Image (cartoon, rainbow, N blue to C red; front, top):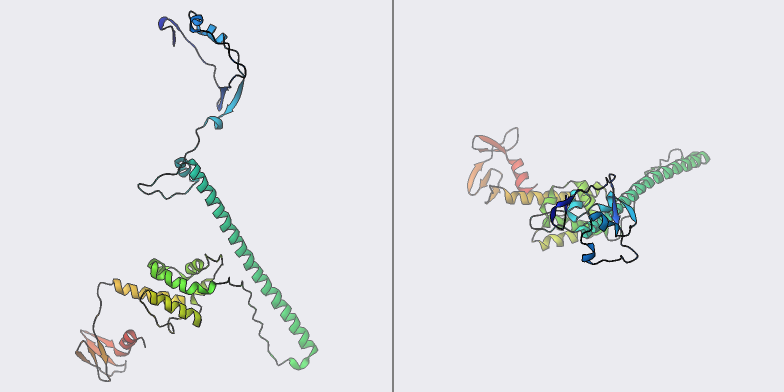
Length: 311
C-alpha cells in the first residue's frame, strides 16, 4: 500500500508485473536529461500521472548470475575451490586472495601432473630401450655364432640396464636425509619409498625406493659423518653404510632415550663369569651354549655379548 501526501484515504494499491525466474529488469541511465518539474507542480498528481511524466527507459535482461552476490574468500573456501588451513585467530582471505590461491594451487597441480607424466614416459622409454637393446644383442650374438662355429663354448651375459641419469648434485641426498632425520625425527618412521620420493623432490627426480638401501660412497660417508658431528652424534658408517641402516640406528637411539628404564653400569665378560656392576654370575657350559642364571631364568652368554657388544 502506498499513501499519497500522507493521506490514508488516498492510499492506492500497486502490483508489479511478475518477473521470469532467473531474469530481472534493470533501468539504464538515460542518455538525454529528464524534464525536471518542481515539487509544487507534482502536488495533487496521482502516482500514475507522475510516472507518466518520466520518459520510457530502455530495459535489458539481467541473468541470475549478474545479480548474484560476488563470492567472498570464505565462500570459495567453503565450496572447496580453495584449500586454506584455518586456525583460531587467523584471517580468512578476501575473494581476490582466495582466487590467487586457487590459481596457484591449479598451477602447482599442473606442474606436478606434468612431472608425473614425464616420469611415466621415462619409465616407458627405459623398458622399451632395454627390450630393443636386448633383442638386438641376441640377434647379433646369433649371427656371430653362426659365422664362427668355434664360439659355441663361449657364454655371454646379456644383462641390460636402462636408467635415467641422476641430476647434478643429487649425490648430496645422503647428508640431506640424515640432516632431515635429526631435525624432524618423525621422518625416522617413514618407509624407504616415501624417503626416496622426498629425496627427489628438490631435483624433480623420480628416485626408486632401492636408493635407501644403496651403499654410500666414501665421499657420501664423509659428508654424512660431518652432518652427524654438527648434531653432536656419531655412527659406525662401516656398519651403517646405507640410508636405511642409518635411519634404523637413529630410530633405535632416540627410542632408547625415550624409554622409561635405562641401564647405566658396566658389564665384564671373562671365560668363567659375567660381572654386572660388580656382581659376579658364573658361566655354566651346557649343550645349549654358555649360560648364566638370572633370577629364575637362564640367559645365553653369547647372545648377551652380541646384544651389548654388537659382535
